[in-house]
Length: 141
Image 1: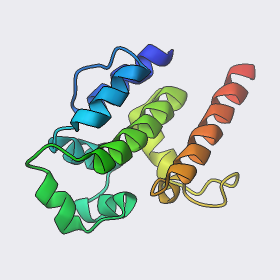
Image 2: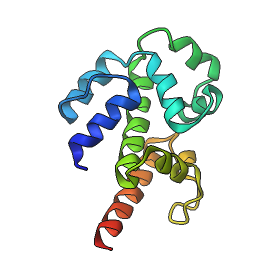
Image 3: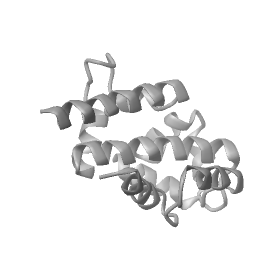
Image 4: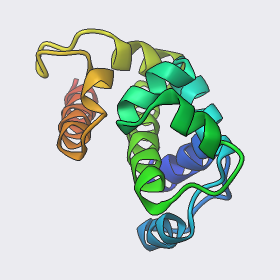
């Protein structure tokens, strides 16, 4: 899979039209994702709305309220970041169930479960770096 496939996966995870490139994601961030993207993210990760709210650093009531409207720039940014992690994990493991399992399992390189690091941009970046190294190592084997 290549970067375009990641965009397709991201679109499916968030319930949006496939972005044409990274610059299109900026426009999506500015205009806001549809609120139902939260439901799709929770489903992709196998999380309840309460569990998902921890990744957004907001109350579950706040997320539930936003499900019926466009998300603001902050929530959209978090959703895009988490969606990009899911897309990369799905690409690396070639399967959404395996990706979800990896995200929820302890990773020695991160000294944590990857999903527990997704609440911050730095943590999400570390998870993506780890996934990139898994991808490189699996292609070398």
